[in-house]
Image (cartoon, rainbow, N blue to C red):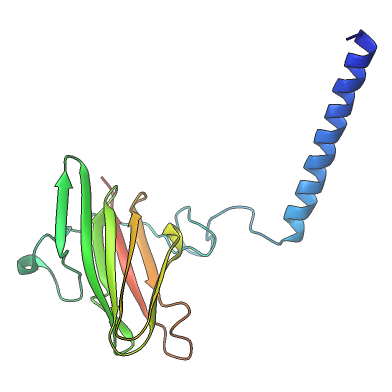
Length: 178
C-alpha cells in the first residue's frame, strides 16, 4: 500500500469514528436519560440501575438462619445450602391481603437468593429493579425467581403490574456487606 492511500484510509476511518460518536451522542441526549445512575435527591443513595432503590446500610443485620431468633416480618430461609463460600438461600414469600408476607428478606453479599412467591388471594408480581428480577404469579399459583445478591445495600421490591389499582405493595431486601 502506498503512503498516500494509507494516509487517506486513516483520515477516512477517523472521520467515520468522529461522525459515529457525534450521532451516538445526539441520540443519547434525545432519549433524556440521566447522565449517571445515582439518585441525588436521596442522601443515602448508592450507585444503582435506572429506577433502582439501593440505599446505604449503617450496620450489618444478622442474617436469619432459623425461626427462633428472627423478628416478625423477616423471612426465615426455607433452606440454606452452603458449599464453601457459595450460599443459596431459599425463601417462601406469599402475596396475600395486598401485602408480601413476610416483607423483609436479609441475605449476605454474594449469596444466591431463590424466592418462591405464592399468590394467595390475587395475582401478584415481584419486581426488584436493581437486580433485574421480575416474576408474575396468578392467583393460587407459585412462581420462582433467582438472583445473585452481588452488591450490598438496602433495596425495595414491589408489585409493579399485577397490583394496579391497589395500594402500593412493597418489601425490603437487605444485602449485608461481606
